[in-house]
Length: 321
Image 1: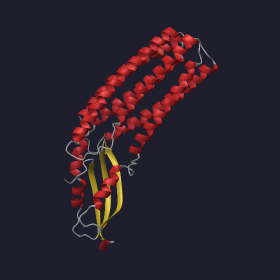
Image 2: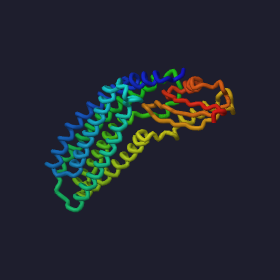
Image 3: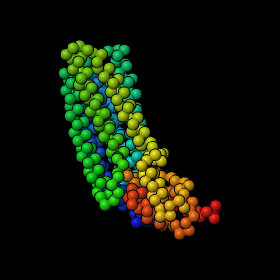
Image 4: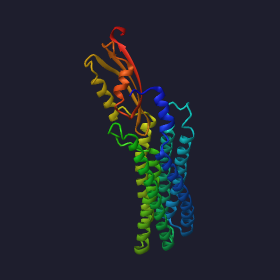
């Protein structure tokens, strides 16, 4: 079936905020409040027991709480403005912008962890190991619970997306909810930092390796930086509409190549960009000898790919060139 402007508007304003998005919003908001409570506990305990590992975990959890709040806000904003016609392709990129901002927050966390760890390497301080270990274990338990909550939200979102394409094209191309993924990465980095903190505290407590505490802070910072770099790349390519190497581009080219009047039509210009999770818009220009070829016919051919929710087609007959 041809994709028209009315189809696109209906998709952008109604289809986008699905049950999967609602589940992701609820999960993200719950995890945010759990993270805030744990953050306050860890920062207080880190200062009281003088553990850089626990303190670093608490401080970078504070940025995670901010990022999780941003993710929850992005879902709420996308839902609130989903019917606003001024958003030409819907409000999905509000969520992508939130994930990009979260990745920048992660880089700030990594920088703070490096600074604090180097400071403790230069000027070691006494650590109250039993108390700090208890706080780190509690932090890890909280992070695992949060990861489970977001994991269930991801499964709900994934099944919702698969259901939407149940009667259409089989290729989903591995689309992710980048906002939910950003929230999940924040929780996983918390969990990883907690594991490193526990290992460092155990080494210092049982073997007297006081240097292990700040060293694991540096290792955690590298891990956080690598995850943030990947998230920046993924969200950045969406915000910059860098999609011309995506498989959907080849699918569009194949549709044009398979037109009945083979050899009479040439694709002269093509632009593809993402407008939702697994949804794309395209603008293409054709040069043809076939006077019967119409934009409607092209849209009907592209209709076999349900991920293409809007197509702008321009056709030039050779005698016009």
